[in-house]
Amino acid sequence: MLRLPPFPGARIHSLVQRPAGSIASGAARIDEVAAALRQLQVGGSFWARQPDLPGGHLLVRSARALKAIPPALRRHPTVLWDQRADQLTEPGATAVVTGECDPWHMLREASALVVEDDDELQLVAGLLGVPSYRLDDQCKAVLVEADITRLVREALCESLFENPFTGEPMDALAAVELCGFWRRLIDSNRGIGGAVGFAFWKQSHVAPLLWDGSSPVRFLRGHDCASESRVAVWRAKASPATLVELERRKVQLVEVEDGFLRSRGLGADCVPPLSITVDRLGAHFDPSRSNELEAILEKGDFDERTVDRARQLRRLIVDAGIAKYESGTAVLDRRAAGRRHILVPGQVEDDRAVVCGGCGLTSNLELLERVRAEAPDAYILYKPHPDVVAGHRRGAINDRDCLEFADEIVGELPIAALIDLVDEVHVNTSLAGFEALLRGKSVTTYGVPFYAGWGLTRDLGPVPARRTAKRTIDELVAAALLIYPRYVDPVTGLPCPAEVVVARLSANDESRAGFIVGVRRLQGKFMRHLRSLVQ
Image (cartoon, rainbow, N blue to C red):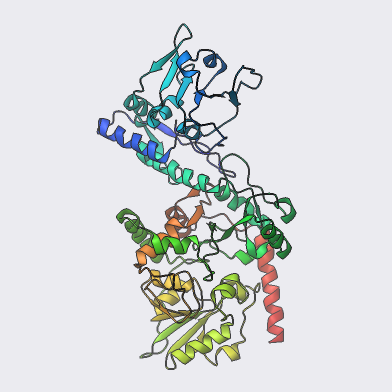
């Protein structure tokens, strides 16, 4: 009854189930599981396609059962769902549906279900309150009273399941909730007809996070997707001509970007992401219009369980020294006794987050100049962006100009250790400001990052007036790390909760760098050498 969706690229293909013996909590536990099944609508091939149905229909599971429909039910439109029904010809308005389908969708608006033998759909029908008929020995359809308690106990509650990420046992309720997590992801992808702008080296990692449950993710060239109604786009890598054509045809563009816990490596080095964000409203770093993350923070109702989970996740991240591109902890000595220490993280100057969120401030040198003007007596540490240090992206400042405003350049030191060292972090739109908030540091923003305007930062940029809510740090973490992004487990290839990726990053449990990553790193070294010759 409870199965693992066949995500593309997954290295685990089933939920391992083993006998658990009697359930001490009895019917109450079974009621919990039944309620969760009904609420989350998982069980059977819940990920599969959802064909158009007439509503109020009679759902029939076999050609033999079709012939046994009681006269009282023949006034309903009939939908025959049977893999073997391709050659069936029946008089009247019988719709024939073949192939794998979502049973909850098939039964949600059904008037009744008719099955030939015992069928898992009887449990789904019972949970949805749909009458169920089964053929007796004389091939007559007889109304069956659904014994939900027995069906749930036999299907789920007499077993334990194996957590695919940890290998530890989990009970039926935890397994149902995990399947519900996968269902929400898959349902959110229904209607996305293709994806453009995705580099070939990240497609396999992104595919399970964009899969709609019934067809492969179609990574397309621009001219191939102009007929679609909704397209996922990695805008920075899509051609301007493609974007113009899609917008001219009024195709809905779903913005995809790196998540905030990305990987142990650089995107510019072709290290694929472990998390992405998928937003139907806009990019999270563009303050000129609303986006789904902003809506979560402005209007979201964070329950106690979610906030507590966010608090624990924040502690795990801080303890492991995890940042967007690196992890590790170290204790650094203070540089100048008696002086306020400020960290200024540099950014890629032509990055969309800087161009959109910087609101006119794009130069790293100008940012340093503004920080010095704000804090003339502070000891300022400047950390260039890793992509810039790697030699791939714009934003380098020669040492002489940098040290006119900064006291020290700290390009090789880990960001988490630097945040622990300083008193304040001053940013344009850098994610380092969010990482500093996780660690309880004071943050000043000069642009408008997603975490500005919620009462947690000192904001010098033009924060949109629509951001009116005041949030705690754990509510911000819940929105930005639990609710908004999507994660893929590098070990199993399955979409996973944030805690799994944090555990993998903490344990350095990721796949090794491949050939392409090695080539990109060599290319970066060459570009850094060239730039050093012209400085």
